[in-house]
Length: 308
Ligand SMILES: C[S@@+](CC[C@H](N)C(=O)[O-])C[C@H]1O[C@@H](n2cnc3c(N)ncnc32)[C@H](O)[C@@H]1O
Image 1 (cartoon, rainbow, N blue to C red):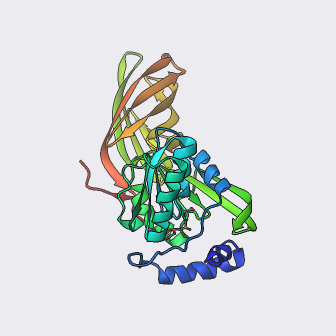
Image 2 (cartoon, rainbow, N blue to C red):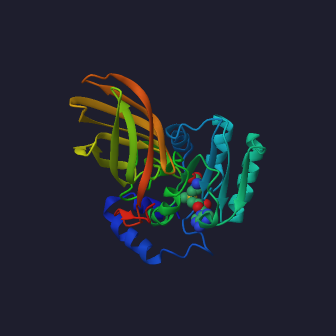
Image 3 (cartoon, rainbow, N blue to C red):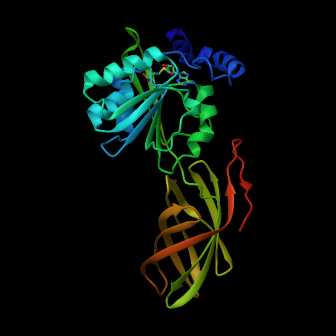
């Protein structure tokens, strides 16, 4: 079984194996869609450290094997969580391993298809699956609570680029054989695309703002209208539900730098704005409302939802 994973890690064979997986993909119900290959313990710990797992976290491992990721998350990092695996032998091993580690009160293991598992309690999702399976899971992962962290061993998410990736040399990757492991890390972004509007009092006068944001995964870009005049947004960042961006615009006849930061929650953003330059300096509250929503279908192009 481990040969499949070793093949996937050699560049020459990757495309052929991916093509085979694409043809075979989609039938996840009856048989495990991914062979059992355990993540080496040092990689498990690196995955959990990259995801900054701690006592507040709820970790779900998709295809949990012998339970090592969830058991380590509980024992070493104080988290809670569960694992799912289609193989009853793996579930039995996991329950035993949790007992030996003394964490049975904080973890659970379920014989269940990962595609039929409710992931909404997760603050962290871990996985060691296959490229095609990652891609089939991607829409479900992107619909999780903004800020949910996802960490994957060896396989990425195609054009959903990770926030961080690390390659590490592992002494015993497949049995006793050495190898290289890659760890990929994502944060589920809020759905921020659309047209946002707000008013701000600057230098004692009301100013109207409109922001049109485009989004592809966590990457955002946009255009502003400030009292009707257009300008391009700079340094736009979205991490989970935290958004920030800036721009320069003339306000009441003076050039002024604006720096916004806030939290996206549904169709509102609440945060602060800092102004500098011109006649007004300082900081004030920022409350924006989305008046038209756009979203990202699986193909990656922006579409418009029914607006309000
Ligand atoms: C590569 S192993 C990873 C095990 C463990 N997560 C680790 O990293 O050590 C993949 C596991 O996924 C399980 N699996 C494959 N397809 C599954 C599915 N559709 N639902 C649940 N588990 C699945 C397999 O039985 C196997 O134990």
